[in-house]
Image (cartoon, rainbow over all chains, first blue to last red; front, top):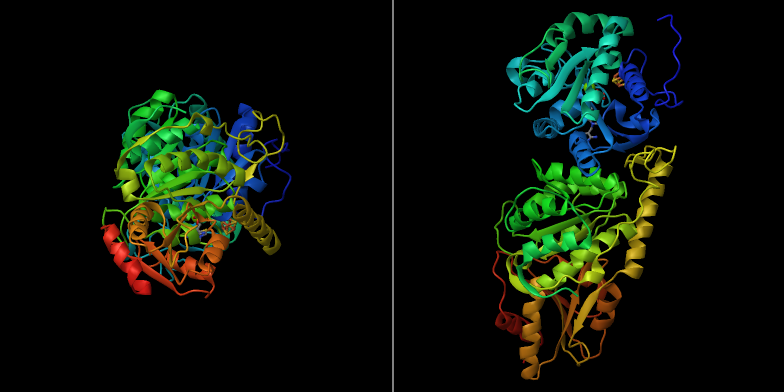
Amino acid sequence: MGKIFKKPEALSDSPTHYCPGCTHGVIHRLIAEVIDELGIRGRTVGVSPVGCAVLAYNYFTFDFQEAAHGRAPAMATGIKRVRPDLIVFTYQGDGDLASIGMGEIIHAANRGEKFTTIFVNNAVYGMTGGQMAPTTMPNQHTSTSPFGRNVDDIGMPIKMAELLAALQTPGYIVRQTVIKPKYIVKAKKAIKQAFVYQLEKRCFSFVEIVSTCPTNWGMTPGEAVKWTEDVLLSYYQLGEYKNPEKVSGDKHAN
Amino acid sequence: MGKKILMKGNEAIGEAAVRAGCLNYFAYPITPQSEVAEYLSRRIPEAGGVFLQAESEVAVSYMIFGAAGAGARVFTTSSSPGISLMSEGLSYITAAQCPAVFVNIMRGGPGLGGILPSQGDYFQATKGGGHGDYRLLVMAPASVQEAVEMVMIAFPLAEKYRNPVMILGDGLIGQMMEPVEFPDHLRTDPTDKNDWATTGMEFRKSDKPNIVKSLFLDPNALNENNLILKAKYDRMKAEDIHYESYNMEADYKVLIVSYGTMSRVCRTAVDNLKVNGFEVGLLRPKTLFPFPEKKIRDAAAKDSCQVVISIELSMGQMVEDVERCVQGRRPVKWYGECGGNIPTPETVMDVVTSLVGK
Ligand SMILES: Cc1ncc(C[n+]2csc(CCOP(=O)(O)OP(=O)(O)O)c2C)c(N)n1
Ligand code: SF4
Ligand SMILES: [Mg+2]
């Protein structure tokens, strides 16, 4: 990007284990920058998922708990309820959040738990080798949908932001991506807003980030960016789906 | 000592936790223990704590995990099918060495089973129900008063070992009304957890993040964590085995091993048989893990003892531990029912006398 960044204090020195072209690292960095800017590192607790980001705590410099697969929102609920003075966020993949952990995320959102969820949607189960996820695109080939996702058999990909925005409880629900600098700016703004709503004890806040998994998509990083933009973003539309300032359920222009 | 009041077991269990200094409770309703949540839904907010009805027992176990990992005293209550769902969480909580208290007011199983008293979850509680090499410290009350005291000491015990403690009561313990008191001296202050819990670095004035986790990809690190857990279980065996002996000074021909409500019936049978001149010893484990292994071994080896019998509200679970302890020195038998009916003292007397003949 031709610009020299200082490493955020909230980010550790450990090199990450993420593949080249994977967006997990960029998202980590944005979270760390926001935490630095808000000055909340000393009272933040992250909850890592089961998925490629299970070791996320190695890359940050604040307290962390490691959840079981899909259960991060329940853990975050436990933490935040007994320690409302802590700033709590979950970091979850699409298999983790939209499949095995669907119950936990819906109920946490519906209770209006005052924590933040960063949802990394890369349309596959990355860690276990690219199996089909609830978010896998129609006809997308994965290791468990070798002929392409058959929507007659398995249904349409789940749009989590829209689904959560349909709940009647106020919340902040937004979808962004980080595949290009122009998107990164908006993604960071959304992440910051999510944490600000938590700091204000306003509502549950949820930032879905449409992400890449070049390794399991069988693409180069460049191809992955293009496929994300052409295919994923046409289905997973970016924008703010719910905002505690506005009427519930409406999609707002991005 | 506080004063004696008449209370239903389930409500007394809820009150005991509050009196012990635990004001954080997460739960999901299930018969025969829903009264705990109903009671605490009023009691905890009044005391300024956290009461939350979760969406499932799976979620409950992770709310407990998160809260315990953040350093809070926390507990839940459930019954058999609910504990099955919490077993995933118990495995993780134990691996991550978080203290918490789980109460299982057992009902009949397997499956939906029934809603009447049972002791069918002995294996689940003492041998793990979740995956991996873990143990819970398991205590089994035989009265409402004992349930109260066990709940109250469960919190400091969980903190002592940084391990979940389970109170394993049968349905009757939750449902019956008995006079209870809440001993003031059993109220304890939580331990300082700043060296490991996610209490927030600025609050504990540290620059070292605390990580609560159960993943150890390196084989040596995982083995090391399992050795740490094993050392705790060995310490439990050395320091926290509890049991009650009844009529064991007599020259008993039969040794009964029985716990919980079932042991109370056995006690009456022992008294009645004594009147008839038939001596029976009763050993009641109060901790099911750690199990009173040596006590049972020695008691079975007494010269007068011809046979040992495990009497339980299950199809023969604790009997396997009794056999393990007796080590073939005496025959080990089993008697039990597990549909919800509790055998009468007369039935127990018949069973016991038939073992050695009149
Ligand atoms: C209970 C349980 N079931 C299955 C697994 C195996 N597993 C590990 S990661 C994973 C999928 C993760 O995919 P996702 O949440 O999309 O994260 P990503 O790796 O793509 O970032 C699965 C199924 C597990 N660890 N635990
Ligand atoms: S497998 Fe996919 S999600 Fe996981 S690190 Fe590699 S690119 Fe990222
Ligand atoms: Mg994924």
